[in-house]
Length: 436
Ligand code: HSE
Image (cartoon, rainbow, N blue to C red; front, side, top):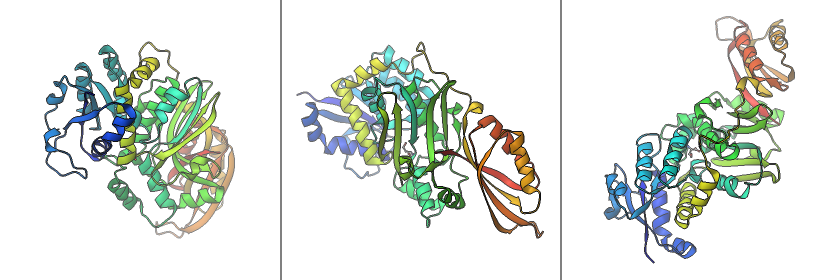
């Protein structure tokens, strides 16, 4: 049996995990695939530092050309992350006749059309299971087992770091910043963890799910996005009192006007399985017209789960399975009929609003008038007297929590803008979506 030579770019947390699984499970992979898959070269800027897994210095290089120009290497694994040089490296791999495996959601969400066109032009493939929800086989499930369905909706927790932070905050004891540090230490967080907490990582993954599940061509930057930065310990208490948990949800939902896409901190009812997903776990609920609702849960970040997905893609590529799926799906193709994306102004849904207000006669009348003018109906409201306003006056302050009935997003945002101008309302209005 002659060895199939593959090469890896990027020896960070995930790259080391991939090297580990390929080197230490080499015999197992040979047995189950019938192929001798050999990690022939690893390219990284740093080829000196010791990694957790022993890697022979003979296969380390900092010269990417030694991979592009090696005709014996047939598969390149891109684990550099970010846009450049990852984009150029993927293009060079394809131009040099090599198939690509990548975990890079930012790259696909931004340059999917260019990279897939280059792969088609060169008769090569791109596999990308690890780009969404790490170890959960969500992309292959949508692409293969569920392909006879029309997908109706996807509701998912796709960012492990923010779920970890929300879980730590909800159960008390851990501050926001130490939860971020812990997520970095465990290898969940992005190089820039702001992308985890501001929803960027989640919209990039949602853009990939939208392409795969719905054939929707959407730039991740156009997806409606709210992060978890404004979620406060007090919100967990109020949410709990109302029967909800707070999760950063990525949603794709087919409606009459097209596909509704958004990422936002969301109050999820206790009995929804997504509400029970804790720590760094990810979960995806897919609804298809034939299959009904299916639920996937697992670790969406971290060395081993992500390496598991990447190794699966490498095996599929070597066995030729990726080629079949790649050619059948025709993703990111210009001439494909694409599903329209609904304007966010026209989304309908329930919202949770929290704000501080002066506690005196007439304040509630003022904000109720704004809701009435914008045609927003209040479903429930809690007011807590809290303390005095810190402006050297003796004004009493109240925290107001509202849940609206289904309302049009454009109307709600207009109402929030108007409410924030009312002098008796203090500071910003915190808003989350609500899913029953
Ligand atoms: N930073 C990501 C997360 C890693 O926390 O989910 C996987 O994309």
